[in-house]
Length: 254
Ligand SMILES: Nc1nc2c(c(=O)[nH]1)N[C@H]1C(S)=C(S)[C@@H](COP(=O)(O)O)O[C@H]1N2
Ligand SMILES: [Mo]
Image (tube, rainbow, N blue to C red; front, side, top):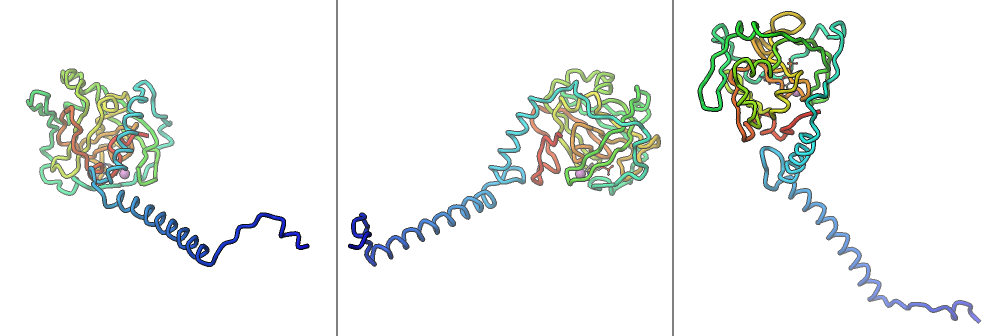
């Protein structure tokens, strides 16, 4: 007797084989189309400030978490002056090309009520000075230990009676020609290591590094360290931000 005959066996007809193969193939095609559709939906779908909507939503969610975790008392690591590089990299020239009128430079601070305060470089240099050597990080993937000096931004705001303005959610900064601009959440602006900086390696800032005044904000990536500040303002809405408009993270903390 053939031993196989006692086992229950399924007899599959030729048509069933064809049908099952067809069904399996159809499922495979649907999966491929599904994955492809999802990707193209993210890629071509509605955009929100330079990034696909779902990606921007993820960045905004991260921003909520990280700004909650942000601790003003936590300092970025500082280095001895000897660790600072002498040849500092120059990155990003937006808003720096036009140097006409640089001799008449002054900082415009727009108060919450719309009044503008005019501040000169000498006014800023008269305030208490602090220097910092830290690892400057660019979002593109490079970093270097560099040495900067200026007045802590919080000291500056307090000196000019801008305590009311410190309660706004954001500070906006723009180059004099308004071609580069950033928005900074206020807790990061008031962080003790954030400087209105006018010196690099114990000398005035070079033109391409933001002469006469730039932001140094060690808790953020390089994109937020605006070179050559022309205007400072305060807002509860997110100020326009050059790189956030081009798809980068608005918060840009690390
Ligand atoms: N005005 C202005 N500021 C700017 C930029 C720019 O293009 N224009 N680029 C930013 C970027 S992306 C970086 S990494 C730093 C680089 O500063 P550095 O040139 O002094 O190294 O400046 C930031 N500040
Ligand atoms: Mo950068």
